[in-house]
Every structure is written in structure tokens, then in C-alpha cells.
Length: 481
Image 1: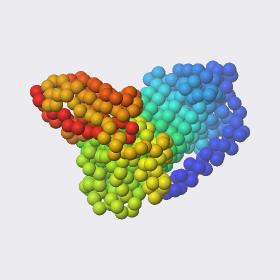
Image 2 (image 1 turned 135 degrees about the horizontal axis):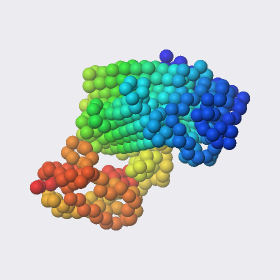
Image 3 (image 1 turned 90 degrees about the vertical axis):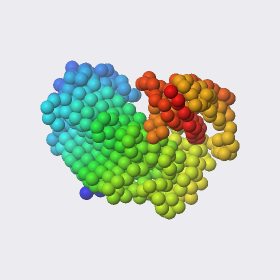
Image 4 (image 1 turned 90 degrees about the horizontal axis):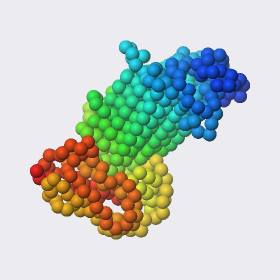
């Protein structure tokens, strides 16, 4: 069934190419004063062509076999802004594939009294096949599911799309896929989205994804239940990722991925780095499901990286699990290190936010013996000696113990990006004190025992963390009120 959906998506792309070759253009605003008027006049094979500008329209309907096209060098120059008056666009009950190319959908709001009314703030795709190419979905809101996009009984193909800053009151801040829907995405970005579950993606009820060479970064699952900062999946769904970066996402459970009820998430040749949870599973939280990781890096999580309950089965092969607070090959992973090519070593990222590898990384093809491990290949030159580099980076706090202020002193051997953060003893990040390029030598920053929101912290032990040039140093701070 899953293979059939991918074949359907490929066939859909070929069909769209045929339709576009026969397209008649309906231009806005030169021929039609509004997007709505052009779409209403369009039929299969037509293109509705938008000149650069901002079109303040909402609840638009995309017809079967029609391409909605922005003509500009950048999709940010052609904008449909719903102004929070309704959804931006719908594609429903289409008997031919449709397409959206080269424009921005923003300001959508899905609200009302039914699940249908409240889903798909930017775009609702129901019983239809739609291709999005070079599309930006930004700043859309759904009171229910699918802040950016909701797919139900649908097939969606995305190429070079950016889905950012969307919010859902329920599932899928960026996108929600339900009821045997499929998503095929290539070179897409899912960034800074938020929902109650699936900060970026919610994949449910038999739905599938095939996501390639994409990134899911800084998404959040907040409130109740707070599952899956990047991905929440359940009910026999099968989300698949290959050569993807999943990093800096946050949730109560499963900072990167939360899976349950027979879901089968799989990550291959991917990098899962520095996600965080306030309860359990900074990387992965699984209940009653399987989890497959292959040639994947799981690194530098500030809490236990894997929490698997109710007979959940994490299966890893040729994976590098390293630098996670609470241990690496522990708990559900005991016995897997050294088997099936699994190992534990510093992946030697080029920088904190650049997860390419130094060419002497143990995850680089010439070093691993099993090909590339992780999403990104070599991106910077050979490091000299890693142990000596660690020795030349210094991190202290003066005084320590302290009340109420301490001065954090750190020394870099060369100019580099540095991030200095404070975590509680459970591994929850409380405040970022430094996140910028710093010169070589000694730098100082004061901390008054307050978190990011300015609240004073109670007495106790805290973790001070310095990250720079792929290195991570940790020391303890003691606050005594």
C-alpha cells in the first residue's frame, strides 16, 4: 500500500507536466482583477499566472488540472495574504492533479465549529492530488490541525518548499496528514512551527511520508499532550526520512519524534541533533511501535535520547549515538553498540549550526567503513588533534557556588561560533547566554540565575554547557540562595 502511494505521486508529477505543456494562461491582474476570478474561469490545463505583488484574498478554490503560478525570481515576491479572514486556499474533490508554483501563502486562519472548519490554515487538500514547487507557507494558523497544510485522503508532492512559522491548536504546526494521505517532499524546510502534537508534522491513520534532503529545525510541540517536536505519528502511519536534518526541536515527549500505536517511523542517512524534551525522550519517545534508524547520527541531546515503552522496538544499524546526557547506548539500546556497524564517537560537526562533517569525522565515508553516516557530507577541512583542541577550550564560572551572580569565563583557541547555555539537572535548557561568533582568547558573560523569561531560579545544581566548533564542554554550577 505504501509503495502504491509513492508510485501514485510520481505518476501525478508526470500528469502535471503533460497538463502544463497544454496550458492556457489566465493572468492576474492584467486580465483578471482578482485571483478568485481567474481561478473561477480556469479549467483543466489552464495556468492562473500571478504578477509580483500582494493579493489580499481568502478561501480560494483551486480547480482540477489547474496550475496556480507566480512569475518572479523568488516566491516571496508573489504573496496571497488571507489576513486571518479564512483559509488561503482549498483543493477539494479534484479528479485531476493540480499545482501551486512559485508563490507565498500567508495569513490563513482555519476556525469554526467542526474539525473541517478548523483544519488547514494555509492550504486544505482533501480527496485531491496537489504538487507544490517553490512555495512558501508562512504565518498561517489552524485552531484544529494543519497550521500550514492539512491533507485528508490526499496526495501531496513538495519540491523546494519552505514551511515556517505556522501554528496549529491540535496536530501538525506545519502539516497534518490523515486518513491514508501521502507526502513526498524533496529539499524542503520545516522551521519554527508549533502545535500541541507534531510541531512540524503530524502523520496519522495510515498516512505515509517520503521526505528527502530536507530539514526540520526549531519546531515545538507545546501544551497537552506535547508530543513530537518535529514529528508525531500514530495509527499505522509510516513516515520515512532520508538525508534529513532534525535538530533543535522541542517537546514534552519526544523532542524530535514521538511515535505510538503501530506507527513505523524510519530515518536513514539522517542527523538527529540537540533536540530537547521537558519530560521524556529528547530524541525519540515511542510507545507500542517500531523505530528504524540506519546510517543516522543521534547526538548531543540534553536529556536521555531514547525512551521506548510498551514493547516499542528501536532497531539501529550503522548509527552513531554520541554525547547525549544520560548516556548513549543505554536503556533500550543496550547490546546494540558494536553490532550492525553501530558505534559511539564525536561526529565532529563543522560548527554548532552547520552539521556538515570535518573530513576526519568518524561519520565521513572514508572513515566510517560503511559510507556516510548522517545527513550531510564533508563540509570543512581536517581538524588537527581533537583531544588537544578540547584541552585548549576552557570553561569556568567565578564564583561557584554563587548567589545571585556568577561570571562565566570561556577561552577559544581561534575565532569561532560559540553557544553558552544553562540547563537544569534534568537536562532542560533554561537560558542561552551566548550564541554568536566570538574572537580567539578569553570571553566573559555574567549570569544572574534567571531563565529566558527572566524568572529567578531556586537553589540547586545546574549544568553549564559550551558548544563550539563541534566540541561540547559541560561543567556544574551550584546556586545557593
